[in-house]
Length: 193
Image 1 (cartoon, one colour):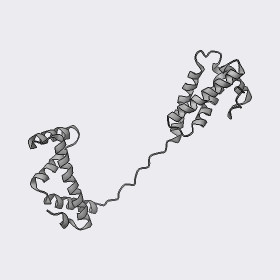
Image 2 (image 1 turned 30 degrees about the vertical axis):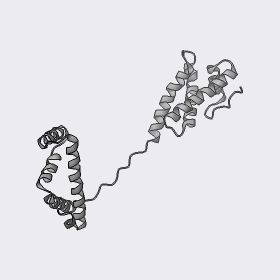
Image 3 (image 1 turned 120 degrees about the vertical axis):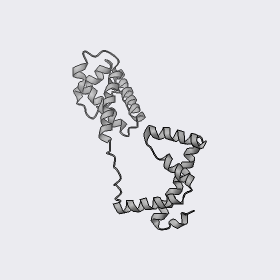
Image 4 (image 1 turned 180 degrees about the vertical axis):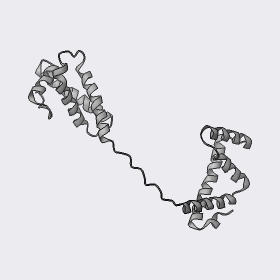
């Protein structure tokens, strides 16, 4: 096998040192280099990187740059050292590629809009049968653990399973949402029962 071409970020001295560190025989060193580069690319691809070739080259360049410091004292599999450097290179790429989340602009609802929504909700609640109105009020009354415990006791009182209670509350809520939407559009009379 021929010796692979010089890696883009390395000078000839570091490149020769890297190949010699991989194997004293230049042909075997070239084969090991190609095998390691291929493994690195596969690792980066498996992690979802769209720049796996570049990250593999950066990893190899970093290892070659550090060789002058580590080659005499390094004991162990060469590939393991490449993997350790590759982990750091990958983490850095994630930080660089991270696009800040764009939050949707807050809805500009004035106090007047909120009052109108609340008035529509009251109107729509009045159209519900008393049993449904009480159920929806009780179902959405509390938060966190208290809400869960309250819903369990509500289901027991009504003789329903938790799933049946949830379905019933969601159906009522859906009706209310339609009614409030129609009310805000000016046609609440359509949804009055």
